[in-house]
Image 1 (cartoon, rainbow over the protein chains, first blue to last red):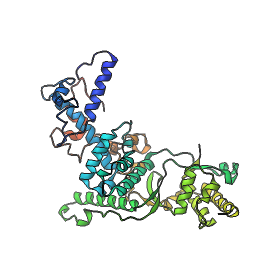
Image 2: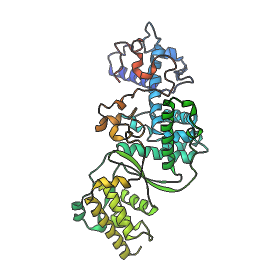
Image 3: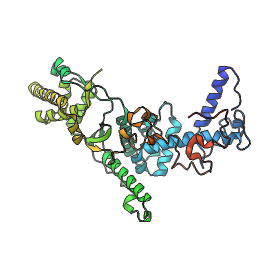
Image 4: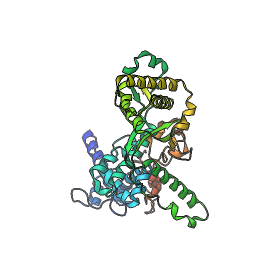
Length: 295
Length: 110
């Protein structure tokens, strides 16, 4: 870098310029765009603050950082959204990812948060996913839920001693932050699992000697047809799971999550649920560690 | 749902909560649902998480990830055509080592 001067504002201006240059979307061929935002050539802009050396021009040196940023964040989305990628196909997924990351660049210390706004972006800008926008948004939500299940915090589970302290009807419990409840219109859980299994088989096949015999079965997983479902995405002993729920169970859990009392939550189950069903559900949810104290 | 039914159902929920809080958790995994992946090595405890922890700084904080080989590759650009230009770009910023792209005065740290 060329010296920025000793004043903090010069350093800040240099950092902002470098930041803008790195985050700028790549041109076709994965190269740095040849024009800067003010109409100058990218070469001129790069030479204004980057030194050339005997092997690389200023622009080539800057391009290393620009490309690296994009390769890295695209790689993260590629890894985190295998279902969405399969539903859209690689080219459309790539276009969606570039559009999304241009609008919502990485702003967190962790790349884990990169996809946090993807579902909202898909709903706001359906042109990237049409005519499969509803499915794409659900897949984005479902796959984001896996990121949450993977590393969101776990709070202390509720204990028998704590339960004994409060009147049953008034007790307010909470769901673990890593548990996401989803009401979906496509069987996204089965679809994403099928895609992952297909991808794993592909990897095995491509590593095997007879890779030319990879069957058509491995090439495509059919997009799911609409079918309503209620899911919890969660983890047990550091392993991720998708659990299908009865609609009444989903409503009760959602009410607990939203801060209702236990009595209010069970009332959400409706008239059809039996006491035995409710006892069984709550026993399992507690065993799974989903139920915790409300802060 | 009338009041007496609601009380019965609430009591059933409390009974479930008590039973679950006293039960051995090991058996719960059997009813946890469908595992996200078949391969148990691809889970949080092994740092591979959902589909690998590439680019996931968050995995650094996981006990299972410390020093795990799969945490490498944060700078990995494989699959993105990053190697086309022949600049050994697959190793991310470190690819400029030896090329003069990152002179010793401004060698990137991450």
